[in-house]
Length: 197
Figure 1: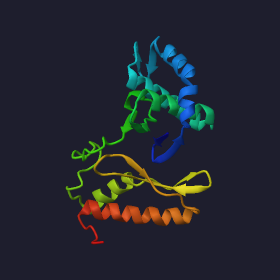
Figure 2: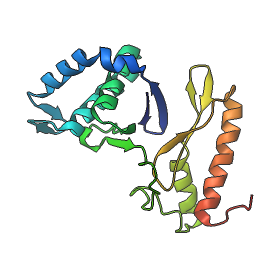
Figure 3: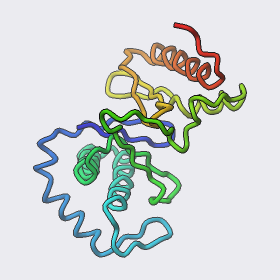
């Protein structure tokens, strides 16, 4: 199972092997037991964290594990989030010390068109001025990042607010060129100058 982890403008795709979700249940339970005693979440102490808050805490631990290149802990924390919040596909981790601002991203329910755009993404129908569109396109298309031996970037879907990762590119230059094409497409969408393809 995959969890997309968004930290600032970087997107990490964490692939948790399904057996691990079962095998690590004892670890997950111990984590839950620790949280039962309350947790300091930024400036606030939460006496009894709910399911979402527990996953925000796990996301914070995941961030620390990413920084320390602790792959086992990255997998365990991603596994905890996937197990405790069915349907979650990604997490946008707050890096400003406000764990409660960490957002969970969910898959779109099957068969239901996403009619309402995400609150932080502009409506695809509203046209923006050139400067505003350039700024928004920069937020909607991540910088190129390294995954294993390949390079990728991610684009935010205007309708659902979900991040869609590009295919792997062999070189940073190739990924950069593809990213620029995606940026240009998003810019055209935002300014209403969509090219007829």
